[in-house]
Image (cartoon, rainbow, N blue to C red):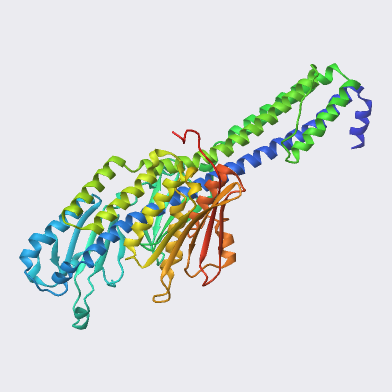
Length: 561
């Protein structure tokens, strides 16, 4: 060490200046580069994880929705009076009932649900066996899955060798008393259609697993993994989402290297900037001495400020020499970094809107509206007013959901969407709860983010009304809208079992399955209007839950036309 110091003392001052400044400047440059790289890499990975988590959550929701569609078909058959007369009571003019009711009913279901491969009823009554729709119960013994252990009140789902089945026995108390097996409704479903979308996730390579309640793996699949070997030692991101209706879990494993492929460009840019800065420093130090020191000190101070994380530093110089150029280039670099940060922030908004548009474009509006119109006409033709009204509500709901692909909607149209959705839910819940909508007329002139009431209402139904104890009290959901200073605020309240305050505080901070809809709404509002706005949850056990949504009084450009 003494030898190095002695050699340094013997150097010419110019060389001392060059060497000293190189040492002093190289350290902060390397730290800034390492800090920028580490921060950018973590940000890219975190953003990719959030996007992937949101996509997987939406996919699990979509799969659950498809399962609910099949569940509704099962309910329409097992709870049908005529089918109970045939398969439970075993009375009536069966040939006539089969010709006029069973055969056309099952055929229509298969025609309108292309992902249904088979609908059959297995029974031990040999007098009613007919073709492919009504089969002998003994055939189940030759199948790989015989549906044993089924309860009449629940549908059992199973996935065997890539084939998806759903089955539910008819409620038949007499059969149980006599030691017989009740008639069994059996659906064979196209698994590819049910799990459509697994290969559209934004990751280079990932593995998909479907696991049942007992933890048994029903399906395993590698996607986009051809020629890309990876294992748990590579750092694997694992995401699990529940599919509530079936009791399954959707599990995705993907290597983290597939989420951060853009980090290499950050390394190259950081190294390039560092090399350019060092070259300029060498040129300037060679031309100046004492007059060169002061501007370098000032520049170094600002670089240290940036190094601490404060990128909003005004860096510039009126000087035309190399120090002035270096200062201005550093300022340009900061401006570019700040611009990139703003672009990344904007990209989050774009990503949310793109996900919503992608979901909307999956629905063919013309086909949907034509289909609903035919259903409505058929219902009116047979004087089924409740079906007609329900069809009209579904049409209103999807018309406002699609919103011509726009992410901004008038408050009045969003309220119409919420009302249509609740009309559908009232029918589905057999009108066992009340829905009240009270919104100040002044708010109807403003615009808001599209599709925010429906997830909150769905949450109030699922975690509030549906969890009321039978006979305790009649369910009630109230949607209110009112002015709050220069803003507008909406509240959605239910008189369900309520929520613990600490749980309410965690819902908006974690992307859990139970609160993902509320968190998604909260994030979309804050990304559009900023942190002062968003979602707030209040509630107490046994006192119900209230969700508050705050927006500015906002009118989108062109909304007056």
